[in-house]
Amino acid sequence: MADQSQAALVQSETKKLKRELTLLPLFGLLYFTVCGGAFGIEPLIGYSGPGLALLLIAITPFIFSLPNVLMVRELNSMMPVEGGYYHWVKQAFGPFAGFLAGWNNWVVSWLDVAIYPVLAVTNLSYFIPALDTGTMVGGFFVSGPVTRWLIAAIIIWAISYLQIRGARLAGLFTNWLGIFVLAPLGLLSVLGIFQWIRSGYTASLPFLPEGENLIGAFSTGLFVVMWNFMGWELPAVAGDEIVNPRKTYPRAMALTLAATILTYTLPVVAGLFGGAGADGRWQVWGIEAENREVGIISNFVDEEVLSNAFDQTAKAKGVSVADVSLYDINVPPVMAIRDQLVSWGVDPTSLSGWEFPQIGDAVGRLVGGEPLARTMGTLLTVAAILSMIGLFVGNSLGGSRIPFALAADGMFPTFLLKVHPRFGTPWISIILVGIIFTVFSWQAFSFLVVADVFLQTLVILAEFAALWKLRITKPHFPRQAVPGGISGLILITLGPVSIIVLAIVSQYLEEGFASIGWALAFMAIGALIYFPMRHFVKPGIPDVNPYQASD
Image (spheres, rainbow, N blue to C red):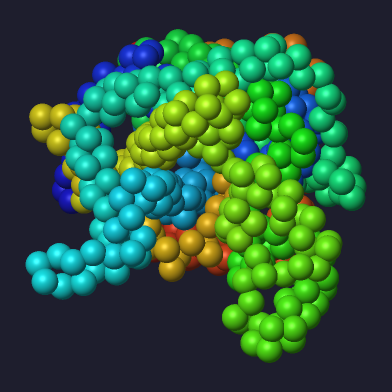
């Protein structure tokens, strides 16, 4: 009797899900999952060089994104249900593998998605200095970090409420965000190309940074560009909320792929050739200070030379090294770099280089002087804030649906199955994820973010493996198959798998075992949770049949 009641509960709650995601709302959610604007691509230029960066931006959509799109299209057309990739991997390799796929990407949402509200608030501090310095509230002083966290929490819960109100409403919200994000980037593209034509700038930009070898620049750039072109499978977890998912999802992916290519290509080209890349300025795009006590000049001056320069200046002035300003130093090698950075409009003591607000400022200054420079900087800062909010909306959709899908399949507690009677959304699951996002948005957890790269790429590898396995074991099931038969499967698998393996190796060499160690620890937790869920929760709850989805 208890078993029957559990099965009835699952059936009654899943039927309440509202299928209301049409093409445009789904396109907005997918765009802000995969891309969300050009913000985040800047380090590709600073660390890999403009020539290699442009090459990677040109080829990555075809050797990484398009294969992912074709893989997702085939698997989603077979199983367009709530849970998406969880069911794809489960049907290919069994319940344990499926559970780990769902668990891994859910953990990724804790570590990665929760950062976006923090980044939005960090950009907002440009307009509200109290977010950095702190403020008085009701007679009590609230420090900058606490203030930023509180504002981030407000964003998290506002978006959580939006998600509860419906996936369609969240999608339409991203459509409007997209307009306000892309308009400043479009204006930058127009101004930069105009300045390029007007100036007749023909100087060739270097392929690699000076002194950098191809392997090092390529591995770093590959990681950056891959991260800016992935996430195609994540909104598929809302399969039961998409109208006609077998047709709507592929169309949304096609629109997103085209929009993503344009979003990255036009602003980068316009910035590089419109003045923000000339005379070596590209070297400060997206970089972070190697020595945070000194600033980004430490990226351009040998550490030993810089240290000796501080020591010499301190001895000459009879003060401690701590009392020496970078601008007190008169050692020629340091002075030359310092003066060069200043001539570019870059503070050598800043902790980070140029992102698109600064790039827009530089292009605007050349086209229209100080007023246009300030306008472009402000517009692109607002766009960056809205982009981070949009990325949170898009990526949090998947994070909030996986617990529901696992509960519907008897692998998470059944209280997560509650669907809002009016809005048709898994509101308890959304609230749970909102609590987790609020906790992980506290900056003390930022060191864990490196683990999400390994976890998500493992899931993508499992999805490609599932594509092959299901093509062999279930060849007659209806699907929108990758064209070309086995040859087509080989072609679309080689690029993504090679890139992912190279990215994992690169991350290990750069970050050490800590990055993989944390990921393995989270996976071990998931493996341990699987067995009590299978033993105590699963009995009486039948497996979801992902092939029976109706359009």
